[in-house]
Length: 182
Ligand code: HEC
Image 1 (cartoon, rainbow, N blue to C red):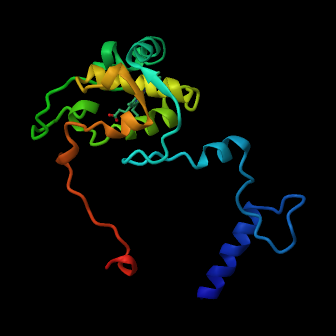
Image 2 (image 1 turned 180 degrees about the vertical axis):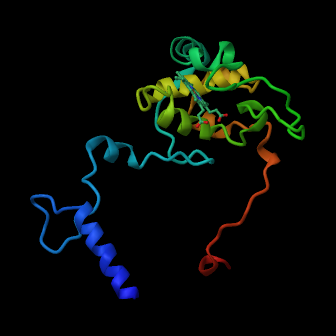
């Protein structure tokens, strides 16, 4: 019976994924060829310690201006709330029944903000901001959350050095694969 099911599944795959012209004979003809955008944005992870942050810089003032034009409709004045949720302010007491999880009260690393904004905001036009714009928006959002941005400017090194108020509010899980543990 197992073989019968496997054959049925194979037949279904064959129906759903007909070989495209140009496929090499014998290949399963699954997936699609990545386009230029997918290839360009594939290796762009920013890690909590700042690895992966690109060159560039932006100021709080530039971020304020960008935010007013591209973000305020969904996140409200100063990020204080709108249909896209609140990004600033909030009660820092996270033990309440419904805690205010804003950037300032909740996020453990500022570097994640860069990664998130670059790949997904503004919601209607992800990947439309250049790196200087993203640094500027991160600088502005830290500033409105009362987190110090030295000289009101951010670049990769300065962003990686920011310590968020809730950095120690998380419990870390060791995910070292067993074969790499000491
Ligand atoms: C069209 C509406 C819209 C616009 C414009 C928009 N956002 Fe958002 N934003 C959202 C929504 C909706 C979410 C929640 C997404 C989710 O939870 O997956 C969000 C989430 C976020 C978050 C994460 C919040 C959190 O604590 O999880 C950040 C940071 C953010 N947006 C920044 C920005 C910035 C900066 C801009 C301007 C460049 C922007 N957004 C423009 C709708 C929008």
